[in-house]
Image (cartoon, rainbow, N blue to C red; front, side, top):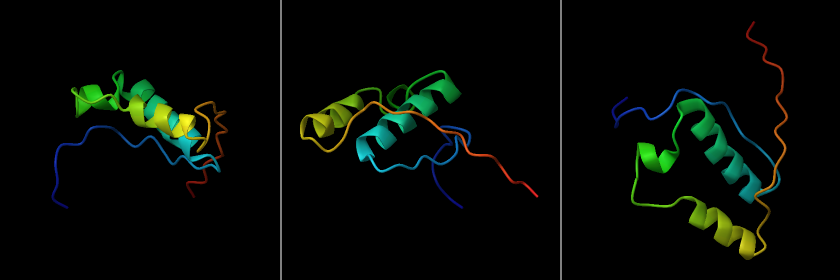
Length: 75
């Protein structure tokens, strides 16, 4: 597979009914796993939270979330 540089190890899959919460939790998981935010890793001139905050203002969801980790079956 061709492509650019790998920015992060696998941080898993995030799913939910609230798209804003999914986006915010994905952002936070990336930051926690890599010690820096996605914009610092790839796009330092762009604030990714602008889109999350705007979506919240539009009533598309909430940036508040609760992570529930599901068990892993690696058999």
